[in-house]
Image (cartoon, rainbow, N blue to C red):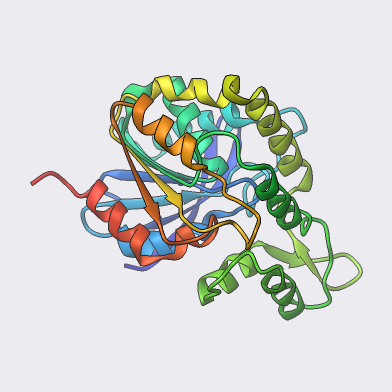
Length: 289
């Protein structure tokens, strides 16, 4: 099925959404990462969406074509409230959810707000505090926001040259093209708000602080629905460590009684564009019977 882009008018503002599949089918909401946009779920949505499942990916506030709200209006809880409001706008009393990277934290925060509404949850490479070296790679990726390149091709080449997305595919061309707009004075730049991303990054820094007592771990207690954690088996970049380490993966499997944990042969970024991930998600979200 072809995709359909549309806007959702929520109490917090306007969010852009992209649907793959039958709008009358059960709802699966997809929540992107820190600086990501809804196109990060195109690979998954095109393969999961169909007559029996509608996959709706969101641009979080301040990202892509969604409304940029004022400073002080971001953070995981605010995005989680938007997820619930989006489901209501789509007339879904209950829904399932996939969160990638920070989107996984937002999914867990949505469970904290109202776990009864969430049927099933899949989390792509998010659990506890990321390894320090991995955060440096994410910071490099975020640094693209506000930068200006002479052309779309030069922008794409800059992203490829970082080396964090391997193998590259046309889905990544599509992803970065989606976020670009004309810059004042010429060239192209990202339409995503650097202020929004930095505010969410600061929120995450606080939630990851204090090691084993980090606040992010306290979200696990609200995961009463079936949960699938897919962690990236490869480092985010060569020598740069992982977002989900071995200890946290074991701790999650032990602490969350409804959870299944699987390792995918991919990086933190390419876990969203690999067939192994789609196969695991298809099995997890398959309708009963």
